Image (cartoon, rainbow, N blue to C red; front, top):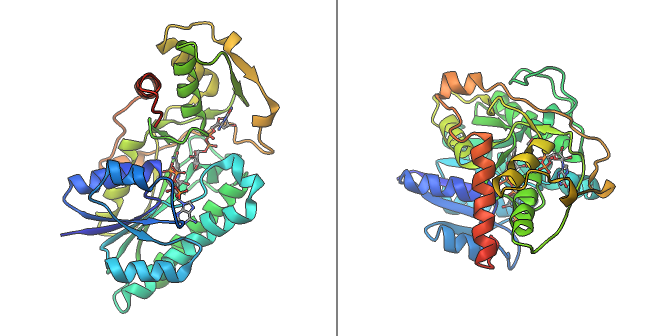
Length: 328
Ligand code: NAP
Ligand code: G4F
C-alpha cells in the first residue's frame, strides 16, 4: 500500500488531496500543528481514515520524527502561511513557515532517504504569486519571478530550494506552480469565498454590504478539486519537474462580483459593495494568467470546472451552510 504524508492537512487543498489519495487506495497521514488545533475535529469528520501526527514546519525535529513514524512513499508539502495580505503584517512568521519550512521539510525527507535519494517523492506547493509584477503573459515554467509580497518572496525561496535539492541530491522533488484555486472549503479571508459567503447572506437579508479592496485585480481562478489531481500526477512521473497548473482564463474581481451576485438574481450589486482602503495591498499583483500546456502535454491534466460553475458552486454551498446555520 502506498503511504502519503500531507503537511497542511487542515487546509483547503490538504482536505481535497486526502480524499483523493484515500479514494486511490493510499494510507494517508497528515501533519497537524498546535496543542489543540481548532480544525482537528473538521479533519476527523471529513476524512476520519487519515492518521494525524503532531508537528510544525518550523520545528525540524518534529518533521524528522513524523518521517520516521510514517516512512511515506510520497510527501506533499502544502503547509504555509498562505494569505498574501497577512504576510505584510507577519513577514517574519511567513518567512519562517512558508519559506524556511520548505527547507526543513526537504532536509527531513533527504535525511530519511539515506543512501537512496529517490526513496521518497516530494511535492512543493509553489504559487503563481511568485510571478508578481509579471515579465510575460501568460506565465509559464520558464517565466522569471518578480515577487511582490513577503508571501511571494517566501514561496520563491521554497521553489528554488526544491529545485536545488533535486539538482544537488538527485531527489524526486517536484514543484507545482499553481494559480489561484478555490472551492466551498476556501478560507473566508480569500476574495472568492468572502464574496460567495457575503452574497449568500445578502440574498437572505442577513447582511447589507460587503467591504472590498481592488476590484480591478485579475486572477486565473480554478477549482481546488481539479488542482490536487495535478499534484498527484507530478509525483507519478518517472522524473521530477516543475509544472504550471492553471485554467488559462483570467477574470477580474468585478467579474467575480457579477457572477456571484448574478447567481442569486442581483444584477446591480453596486449598492451592496463598499470600497475600503483597508483591503488594498502595499504592492498588488495586477493580473495573472497561466499557461498550463506542459501539464496538459506531460501529465495529461486539464481543468474540469469553469469559472462560472466554480462561482455558482461556492455561492450554492454558502446558501446551504447559511440556511443550516453552520458555515463551513
Ligand atoms: P490553506 O487553506 O491556507 O492551508 C494552509 C495549511 O498550512 C493549513 O493546514 C495550516 O494549518 C498549515 N500551516 C500553517 N502554518 C503551519 C506550520 N507552522 N506548520 C505546519 N502547517 C502549517 O492553503 P491552501 O489553499 O490549502 O493551499 C495549500 C498550499 O498551496 C499552501 O502552501 C499555499 O500557499 C499553496 N498555494 C495555494 C494556492 C491557492 O490558490 N489555494 C495557489 C498556489 C499555492 P492550520 O490550520 O493549523 O493553520
Ligand atoms: O483571494 P486573494 O486574497 O488571493 P491571492 O492574493 O491571489 O492569493 C491566493 O492565490 C495565490 C496564487 O496566486 C496563492 F499562492 C495564495 O496562497 C492565495 O491562495 O486575492 C485575490 C485578489 C487580490 O488581487 C486582492 O487584492 O483579490 C483582490 N481583492 C480585492 N478585494 C481582495 C479583496 N482580496 C481579499 N482577500 N479581500 C478583499 O476584500
